[in-house]
Each structure stands twice: as C-alpha cells, then as structure tokens.
Length: 160
Image (tube, rainbow, N blue to C red; front, side, top):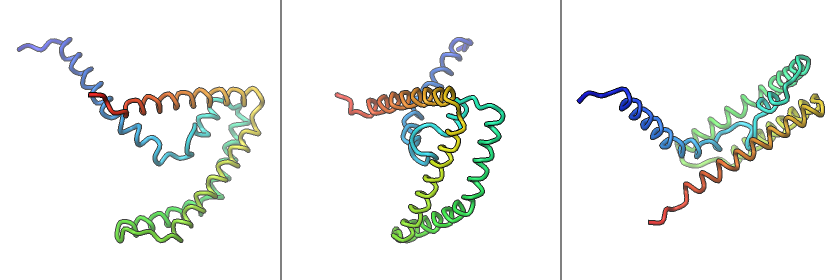
C-alpha cells in the first residue's frame, strides 16, 4: 500500500490531538499543585501587562533583588526542613508536628513577603498601569474559571 502525504498528515494530526487530550487531564490535575504564588497570575506576568518604563523596571529589579537577598536564608531553612520532613515520611510514614509547624511558619513568612513585594511594585505604577494590570488579571481569572468549569464537566460521570 502506498501512503500518500494527505494520509500521513491526517494520521499525524490525529496523534497530536490524541496525545493532547490524554495529557490535558494530567496537566489540569497538576496545574494547581506546587505552583509558586498560589492562585492567580504571577507578579512577573502582571508587571509585563503594566508595560513598565525603564526607570520602573530598575526599581522593580531592586525590590526583587532585595527581597531575594533578605529571604535567601529562609529558603535554605525551608529546603532543609522539607528534606527532613520527606525523609521522615518516606522512612517511617510519620511526620513530626513541630517540623510541620516550622515549615508552615516559614511559608507564612514567605507569603507575607510576597505580599509586601507586590504592594511595593504596585505603588510604583501610575493609575493607567494599575488599570491595565487589573484588566489583565480579571481576564486571566475569567479564563481560569472557564478552564476549571470545563475540567469539572469532563470529570462528571457519564450516563451510560
């Protein structure tokens, strides 16, 4: 049998679609696990929407660098505590509540620092930029809600 180009193109397209449909549920399940910054858009994406001026970019860079330097030890502590927790979980199946509380406290501190950084960057923006960022954020949230609704509808049991 001679395979023509049209047949190969159709088969390739079907394969791409099949792989995409197969991986979509996996990606959707994983998309809310392990994301930095929690729900919503990242600071970087939102600041891109603001279309920062060069002087603002320099100020944001300084804010971010200062925050990173201030939290470097905190990240090191958090990594060590998480490794200790994982070692305990995977060896004994138990977790020391004190260790869990220490991790939670450090994560809370990082969350507070992220909020402070966001507020500092937000204060640099003029009202037009703030409006632009708010608009992009609202768009992203609407798209996220739509994806979640689609995912939920796909997870509904099928009537047979």
